Amino acid sequence: MPVVLMTAFATVATAVEAMKLGAYDYIQKPFDGDEIRCLVDRTLEHARLLKENAALRSVAEQQLAPRPLIGSGPAMK
Image 1 (tube, rainbow, N blue to C red):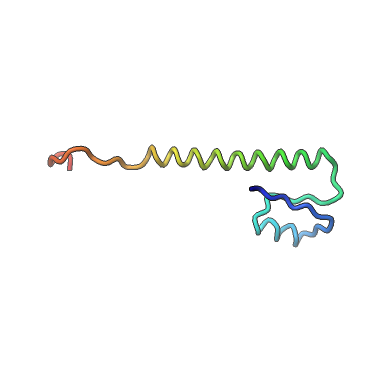
Image 2 (image 1 turned 45 degrees about the vertical axis):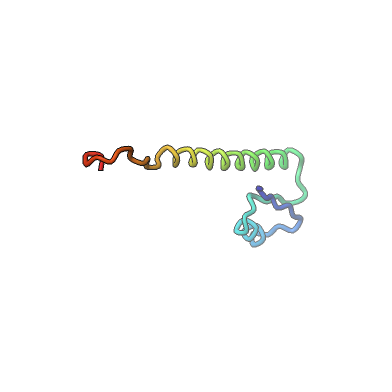
């Protein structure tokens, strides 16, 4: 789940620490409605892209996985 830190006391240090701990972004109070909507939209789109990327990687890994050989003749070995 993406995390957005909302704070009234933002400093560079707290923002960096939040990002290191896994926050997607942060927003400082006071903020306007358009700003928070844009941030939420961007955060949800990022989460959707991560999920899509993981699904595509899984499909690619399955398609590229070596398949077992059928047959036991010398030519097959």
